[in-house]
Length: 295
Image (tube, rainbow, N blue to C red; front, side):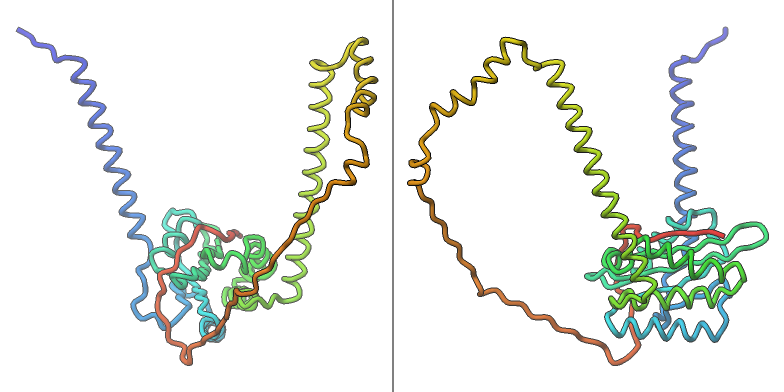
C-alpha cells in the first residue's frame, strides 16, 4: 500500500529549508564582510596606513607630519588608508565600516576624516574616497571632497604617483579643517554657493508662477463671477466705505510697545593644544558624508 505525503506540509518544509539556506548565506556574507575590514591598529602613533605599499617614503613622512600637526592644532584626525582590494564591497560601505570600527575622530567633536585609496590594477580600476565625520562636514563639504579628488588626486593617480596624490589632498584638507581655505578652494566654494543661491531663486520664481497659474485656473473654472456678480463686486467698495470707521477715529487710537534687552548672557571660549604628537582613537562616528571617484 502506498502512502502519499501531505502536499501542504511538503511545501512548508521546502520553504523553511529555502529560508534557512538564504539566512545562512546572508550570515556568511555578513561575517565575511566584517572580516575583510582591517582591524583597528593597536599602536595608534601613525596616521597613514599604507597596506597597499604605494606611497613612497619621502611623501609618507611629509603626510604623516602634516596630519599629526593638524591633530595637535585642533584634534582633527585625518587617517589615510591604502588597501590592495575592497573585497567586493562598495568603497562607500567599506569606508563607513572602517570609520566606525576604528573610531576615527573625537567622540564629542566627530571631526574625523578617512581617505581610502584602492590602487588600479590590471584587473580592476582604481578607487578613492574622502569620508567625513559629522563634525567635519562643514569644513569639508562633499563638493570640496569631489573637487580635491578631481583636480588634485586623479591626475597624479593616473601617473601612478600615489604619494603625490595623497599629499596634494592633505595640503588642501589640512587648511580647510583649520578654516583657512586656500585661494582656489575659497573661489570654488564661493562659486558653488552663488550657484546654489541662484538656483534657489529660480526655483522660487518657478513655484510662484505655477502657483499663480493654478489659482487662476481654479478661480476661472469654479469661482468666475457671472454678470450679476459683477454688480456686487463693483458696489462692494462703496458699501465698505460707508460702514468703515472714520479716519479721525483711527487716528485717535494709539498703540504703545516697549522692548527690553538682557545683557546678562556671556560666554567664553578657550583653546588647548597638546605638546606632543601622541594620540589615540577617539571613538568618532560618521553619517556617510564625503565623495568618491574612480579612474
